[in-house]
Amino acid sequence: MSPPTPPSPAKKPAATAPAADAARLLAEHVRQLHTCQKCPNMLKPVVSGGPVLSRVMLVGQAPGDKEPILGRPFAWTAGKTLFRWFQEAAGMSETMFRQRIYMAAVCRCFPGKKPTGGDRVPDPEEIANCGTWMRRELELLKPALVLPVGKLGIQQFLPAEKLDLLIGRQFTVQKAGQTFTVIPLPHPSGASPWHRMEPGKTLLRQALALVVAHPAFQELLREPDPAPPGGGQKALPLWPTNR
Image (cartoon, rainbow, N blue to C red; front, top):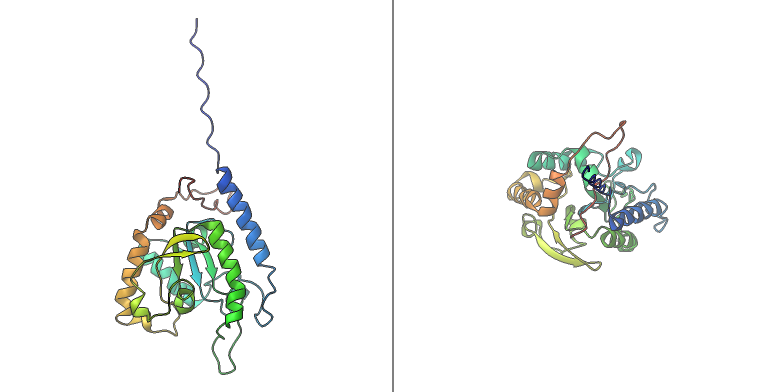
């Protein structure tokens, strides 16, 4: 008598139910974000990095005048510097960064120009209005690591201090019912010399080393990046369920 045929191993689901639910909720959140009309003095359209389900979250300040045209955050010269930092520190390309890290901001619309020149700083009401979107993102993503960029971004998570006292350090922060690591970064704008001179250069290197060593960032670096069948964008990363 022939031995019984062993059962075929069960196929591993592509994503657990909680992760699939989170992906659906995040996609709906981003769709609603693009319809926001809370701030009449902000210039549309809303700029978003898309519904990237990730344990790592970047929080910029506000889009400039080029980002609404190009349709993505950090799309111009400051972005080139930001992505160069991560390429040099971690071997992470701009494409990989955009696919694996959720890109948020204090405000998601271009504030416009000041009469005297330069971009207008969002007012407290605009920051509070857009803060409701970021709070919801923290609840949905439950990030392990948040990277605020620039003074305005940093101030949403840490008390206002000189950059010398904040960059190159990591902090444990509680916000929106979540607890996560915050590693602040200077703004990569060419208008700011801070990150190009000491002590900024050394503190920036220290900050990037902390980012790269963080377990959540290491997870992103270990993720496979296969070419999707038939071309197209790779699947967005999902966090493990045993967090």
